[in-house]
Image (cartoon, rainbow over all chains, first blue to last red):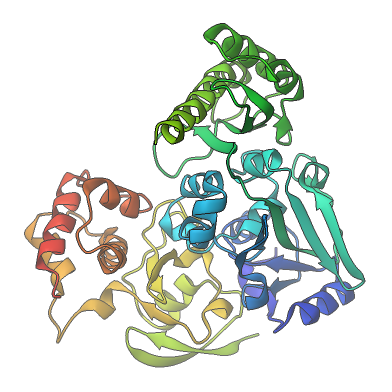
Amino acid sequence: MMRLSDLDVVQPRTLSDALTVLCQRSGSIRPIAGGTDVIIQLKDHLLQAKELLDISGLVELRYIRREGSTVRIGALSTYSEIIESPILKDSCRMLVEASKTIGVVQLQNRATIGGNLGNASPAGDTIPPFYVLDATITVHSHKGIRHVPVEKFFLDYRKVDLKPDELITEISFEAVERPCEATFLKLGLREAHFISLASIAVWVRWAHEVGNFSDVRIAMGSVAPVVVRARKCEEFLQDQPLSEDVVWKAGEIASGETCPITDVRTSAEYRRAVMPSLLYKALHTLIESRRMWETR
Amino acid sequence: MERLFSFKLNGQEVSVSAPPAHTLLEVLREKLDVTGPKEDCGRGECGACTVLINGKPVFSCLVLISQVQGAEIVTSEGLMKDGLPDYVQKAFVENGAVQCGHCIPGFIVSTEALLNRISNPTVKEIKIALAGNLCRCTGYASIIRAVEDAARMRPS
């Protein structure tokens, strides 16, 4: 049986070197960055590899920057770097808040945003935010670059549109600025170091009147093999003044768009039942924060 | 298949020969006899293996030895000053925050990193910083008291 200590580790100095190695040995070599998922999967024998391609030293993939209204995050940025980023604090607080809820400090210091995307867990907590941001994932290979809309990237349970010779290099999206706003919420069994039972990200573009929005995007995590956009719910909410009745009805519609399973953490029924409350809380948070900036 | 790795460990330059995909924790304990960090879960849930890499707490059971080449690593052993416990270690002892002691080296370095970042943390900030360290003996009240005390004792 393969043991972790039997594996060789290749450490390229540049992205271009990494892509060359990946092209030559695709199939037998496995990329590793922060290692917080990959090392566990290797220990559990869920992952087969002869060699590891350690890309954690590629500083060229470690950046958070803003170009005009576009925010670009290099794949090797850690959650800690996201949490501490002044750019993201202004341009996408939702992602900062989501990152704070992932694991604990020891994990946030190692785990990378590219890893969260590549690992493609239905409970990956940065993924619902990226769905509502309509983010774009950039992948590089020896042959060139591809830009994949986030929704097209996740194909099925832990299956992504990434070939063995490709690396995730960047995720980019439009900054969230007034009159737009976004929030992320997740539900777990305790307050720290927990995996989502269900999660929701909501992005809105407010209309002139308080309580109305001209555009809304909703994505739900941990309730299907991949994160799902609640499109019927979005359509229902479009151009509709918010009221208690409307929000609860919208929650029911969103709940109908999930396809959850029962697992060690909770039941499918619970995941479906809790979605209206998550939507209610998320919209409530957004309305409150709009009131805050209206009264300021 | 072993390779030579060099890094700074508790203030000293070390070079050690190890398989490149050994975890940092395995190398610390089995090759370098640094046994403060412990292996309990081996999957980043318990925090007993916590060490500081370049000042930041990480789970050493989820880091490859290849990934720390040239880095600066600190374990609880490295905090002793002239053979005596430092202010964090002293605060844990004085507040009865230690029972079996197994998890404490992890708590100590997590606390050290917290106080280097926030010199006077709130209880909430302490809880967030220590959420990745589990203790099954004491409950956490005395540990939180120890951290508050350490913040007061911290040399400026």
